[in-house]
Length: 351
Ligand SMILES: Cc1cc2nc3c(=O)[nH]c(=O)nc-3n(C[C@H](O)[C@H](O)[C@H](O)COP(=O)(O)O)c2cc1C
Image 1 (cartoon, rainbow, N blue to C red):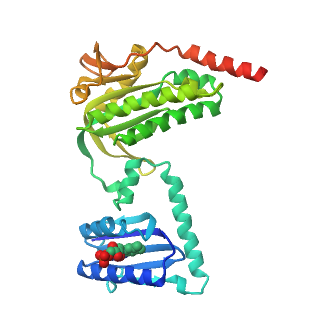
Image 2: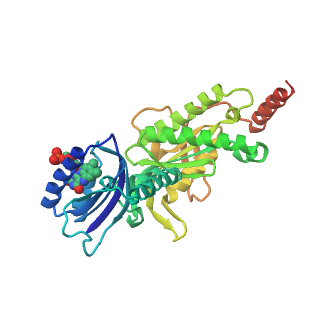
Image 3: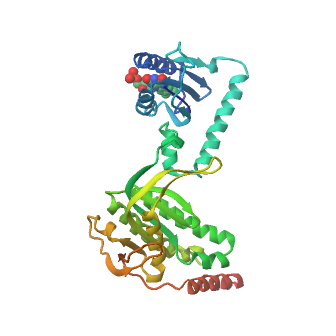
């Protein structure tokens, strides 16, 4: 059996009639499907606990509760599988409308729920989107079993980052990194991929195996967006330095939870991930912004104009591999770029 609890906010002021309507429809459905639980109203917030068969709770939560436009900001607090005994065996849906109480307790309780929502919102900004999606659907991510899947892995990084890291002011360095991450996460998201993690200035993302075109589209969108950001950059902005390289590889990856009780990560591992990272490093050696393996270009349906860059033996790979590049650009001299913006800064300081 599963027990799930969540909090949410009213989407608009709800009257007693609205609450009664939820109660009526919920009780009817829950009785028919063997669900028990409670619903607490506090100011403009709900707190609900539901218990029943796992599949029934998942369906109820995803198809009825999350779809209900009378509430919003639904945050799943907990979902536990394998619960032995029901906590509320006698109630299919008991409502406690604490707004009808005059005590100070409801106010304090409401404050606690608001604090929970706000702290969750803050923490969620540091959490990878795939984990958030599990949590939103009431799935406990720590219980997800590892699996092997085919994916197209995208690895993106800023050209010359180590050089700039030693020379830029911290505020400019972080601005540069954030601009790359922002452009990259948006391109990946728009094309249906998942950003798996941020690795310093780099981004690791992946796309379902059949969506090789989407991965290439994300890579080209990203390079174009960086071009736009550079051309929009004003005088001393570090965005003048925003050049990136993207490696794309397709193959088997392991997806699952790794880590310890202190630090956990839901991630992908395997040779395909290493390969994407090695290809990304090659982008600056070969002066090509996007480099992919044949396993990506063969699967892509659109003709993207990839050109063979010959066979290369990459670190950690036993055999030489033919690789393909997209859109050759002028060679980049990071030191010249840096001098260009520091020169600009000095002349601005003199003005
Ligand atoms: C805060 C809140 C709690 C809800 N709890 C339940 C519930 O326990 N069981 C249920 O079936 N639907 C629940 N719902 C969903 C709606 O009651 C239901 O989907 C909607 O009224 C449609 O009902 P109908 O099928 O009678 O048209 C809840 C909705 C809200 C906003």
